[in-house]
Length: 204
Image (cartoon, rainbow, N blue to C red; front, side):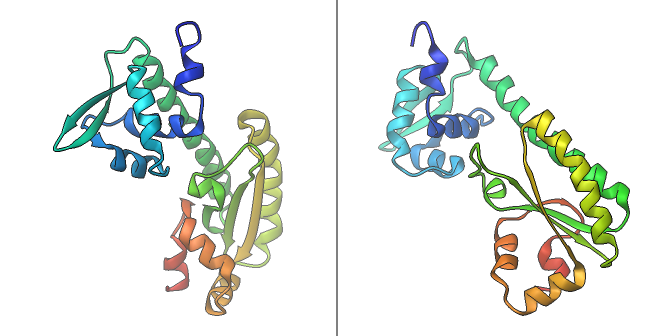
């Protein structure tokens, strides 16, 4: 820990998720709430104790339970605060680039990220799944071309592999009426880039 503290403090995905959830907070949270906010299992309680022992989290006891806060007095606290700010900017920059390209096209009704990225479960091999809904069938080819050009820049600038699905609004509504599980997945996981959300488009 002394020579390479980040190996210990950021050594597992669970630690990263817990710190990501706790760094912005100014209030103490229980281990259970910390796990919920971070989207990790309650097994994370041991990880919270490890981070508390390392000093990056403050650990207090109240009403029979441990409460945790990010230790802003720690010498590495500014590093973590800036790291997670930059991470949020990174994601926002990707979404902004997608939004600007699709809005400039003029025929896009809505664009939605779905799948593992939207759920916060994406790994190094995951694609960025993007559903783009266009108003007319004739626009699909143009939008595919826009996304093809955009894909190279996203890969080089952000390390992101774009996996787009382009359908018409009519096709979306038809698949929704037929109970297509793909539409259910999009509804469940969606992170909207632009335009109305899927339920607004399908009336469900």
